[in-house]
Image 1 (cartoon, rainbow, N blue to C red):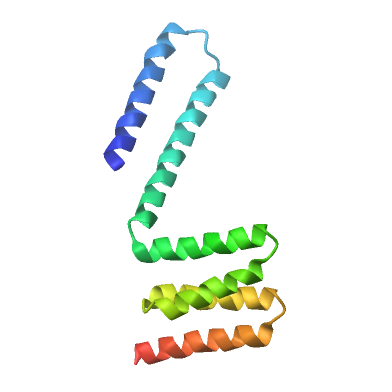
Image 2 (spheres, rainbow, N blue to C red):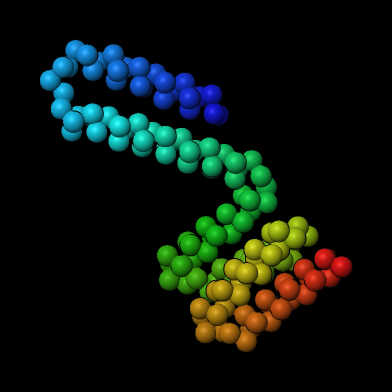
Length: 135
């Protein structure tokens, strides 16, 4: 992935530098535009690389998917319904990183929904699991 990024940026830079001498009338605005383009390309490839890193790690991907599910429910005006999905994650997963994310997301969502007592219960359950795991 890193090689493709480097190769692409090198080709783009070479093309732009090859054209530059022919356009001697270029002003600073055009040079800044080229620099901005190169910066955007670098950022674009960083996003792709980051997405690949997340997608290649099942824990990170599961946590990202839980966040996206929450976002969809929130966009639909019913973020509290994501709590049911997250409770299902707690039933199905033994992975502590995924469970920790689910407990935190449940706690935040319940608190935002005006269900602070229930939020505290889930946050306490998550804390208890982590204390047991740390012993």
